[in-house]
Length: 360
Image 1: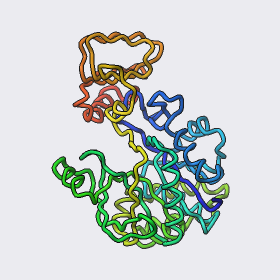
Image 2: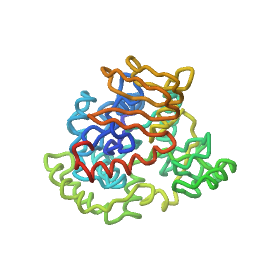
Image 3: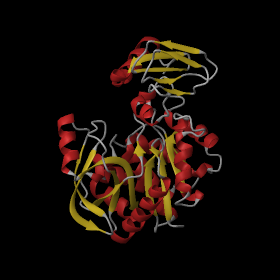
Image 4: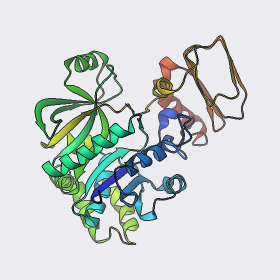
């Protein structure tokens, strides 16, 4: 267990959950399901069951350092890796894995987003432990795939073949970005496709070897910093290094190209909580399908299947609303049909164009 490490990626701005999720306080730092804990707190607690607390690293934007420290007070300053700019997942993984490899060349690392929901923690812990052991034993790159329950067009898909290692790790055949509905239906019917959960497991040795092969320029940038990692000079080096990195995801940069990628089919009650519709699906609902978080002062007449998230102290009365999202936060009220919630990103862009960053 002392060789096991976790890297939690917490740098996103969660714009699809506007106006509750804002640039200054994005969704990973919010109790979006009304459980009493924020998403990053749930993620951190899950990993405490797998790795020692000193082996958990949070990669986040510099502007969220204080939020991380506030919500995870047990974390040392050296465990919070600040990014000066957003550059997608490959640079943040290169940074964390180079840093960890210098501390422990035998490290096995799990990398996961900070804002996903996992219902069955015990199953998750078992799957991650199996993956860490398999990744070390076979020096392969492991990704976790979710058995699809529907032909969802919002997720990427992983196709696997019959070649396996360990108990149930299948060789990956293809990665497909978000498909259209027809294609998604074909994928689900075929039985050899899984949702891409964006959770990765590997040894430090295997991932750094992959960076050297498939993203050599990016790898060289971080190799250059090895003399200052885990010293006072680290932060100044990173401030400069990030601006030299290309904006590329780990999926596109490495996972789609490497030939030693395996997927573990899993079923631990996963959701990436990517949209209000996904929160609605998971939230408790009344007998006519309304999900209200928090529910103390919301009165609804002749209304059904609505997702309502408003400040606790505000009295809200809704009449004759069906299949709507009603969200209020930060002096902003948004009322939007559930069927049109994909327009939220455009709304945010329009608001920014009209009022600057005041409401973003």
